[in-house]
Length: 272
Ligand code: ADP
Image (cartoon, rainbow, N blue to C red):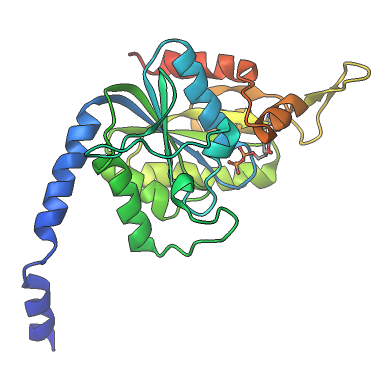
């Protein structure tokens, strides 16, 4: 039995050549991209995709060449937040969808036949799609590739960590302990896979009352800041809860202003 297993393990992998070729393509593409940032969160609904999109928009607004890659295969939301309806421009190799001269986007959403149906992705399939997003897409030279990962520490962030060895993580949390506790797992994940942590963003951090102008701490504030301090990671800023952010996302419009300081904090951490 043990001998049989050894024989199987030593048998040549019929797909090894394909994989080697794909690895080469991946390395080619990654070599043309200066900085890669993986946006992660412990929980869903904390505003991770909104942070990823607005970081990309603000960087593009500053004149950097930016790519935005949505690897949330179960719930891709980047095209909806940006109001992108287009499909991938063809050619020998498909290209990412241009959003502006400085920003191009890739997501599984335009390829889904029915956006309201759920797609069942098994682990290896997910890994394959994410690798294809890098190997089979004709990315131009980029200053930044922003990657929006689904919440948690599953196949998607792991594939990014294994495929893009020089990616940095940006962690998004809301202030309350229930969310912060989960983001600590993301921190631990980054340490286990040796991914440097760019910093933590605290989203939905208080809100200004539209009637009296006073600050309302409805999710409490400061949880992200406290955690960043405790774990010795950089705090990249607080984004208040702002109904204009929801409205903008619902209508596929942009509202980048609340994310400007966070973008400057990211730039201060990564020298171009
Ligand atoms: P996640 O990617 O973590 O699941 P999303 O970015 O999709 O979260 O955001 C979830 C919802 O919260 C969306 O409706 C979004 O518009 C809203 N949202 C995100 N950040 C803010 C904010 N700072 N203020 C108000 N609404 C926000």
